[in-house]
Image (cartoon, rainbow, N blue to C red; front, side):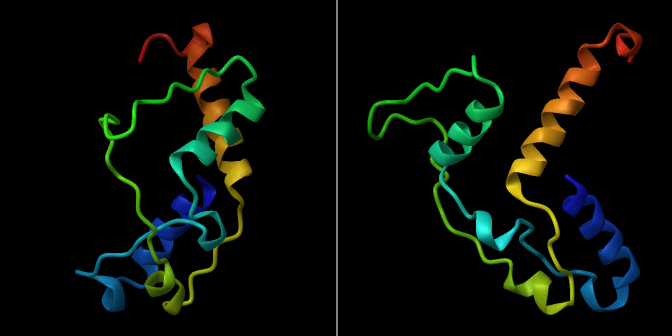
Length: 104
C-alpha cells in the first residue's frame, strides 16, 4: 500500500513526463499467481479458506504477467514487499471493524 501511495505522489511530481501514460504498478519480484497470493494471505490469517474452481470455471479469468519496467524507467523504485502490503491491508480491514469507525 505504501508503494502505491508513493507511486501516486511520484506521478504528481513527474506530471509533465507521465501525464497521459499508462503504468503497471506492482513490485517486480511479486508477479505471482492468485493461488500464491491466497496462500500468502492464509499465512497471516490462519482461518482464511481458499476455494478452488473446477478447471475452466473460475469466474476471474485474469492470469497474466505484467511488466513494471515502464514506471521504473521514470526513476520510481519499489521499497516494500508483498508481505508488507498484505499486513497493511489486514490492519486497515481490522481498523474498520473497530466500533469507533462504524459511523462512516
